[in-house]
Amino acid sequence: MVYALLAVLGFSLALMALVAASSQRHRFLVPRMPTGTLRSPPAEQLESLKRSGNFRGVSIETRCRAAMKLAGREFDFADAPLLPVTGCDAAVCQCGYIGLPERRAVHDRRSGTDRRKAQRNGANDRRSGRNRRQQPLAQPA
Image (cartoon, rainbow, N blue to C red; front, top):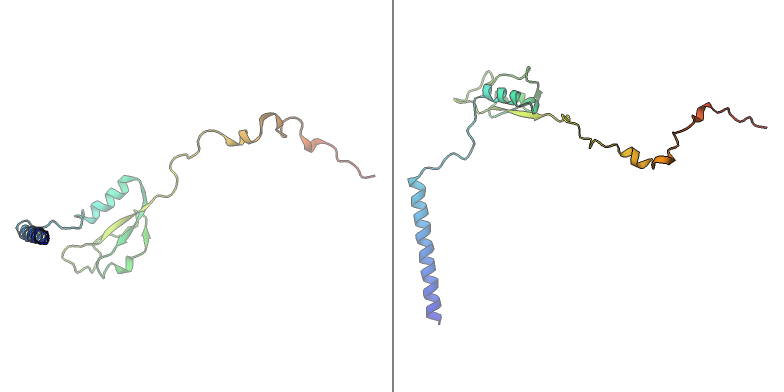
């Protein structure tokens, strides 16, 4: 029984080593794709953010020292600085625009029914009938 268990354990270890070796060989045969997403040029980024209508402006995602002075600032589309920033020393500028989402409600969130009518209980509405302010004030005796 012990020999059978050792044989199964040895076979499984050999199988795992074979799988690990084949995956290492495969890694060199097929190059990996870059993990980051490929960016469109900054001018296209700005135009696509404008066209979407979901953003009120942009902020700058900085990847170089020249753009660090713009970090954390918010710009309207008309005032957004052009990228790459003057003084950028990168061969290909990696800075980009980040859209600032429009937080104002663009649609009416009300359900369409007035809930206040349900709270008034119909006939017990004190505001129906005569106006209380037109009554003469009682004179103290």
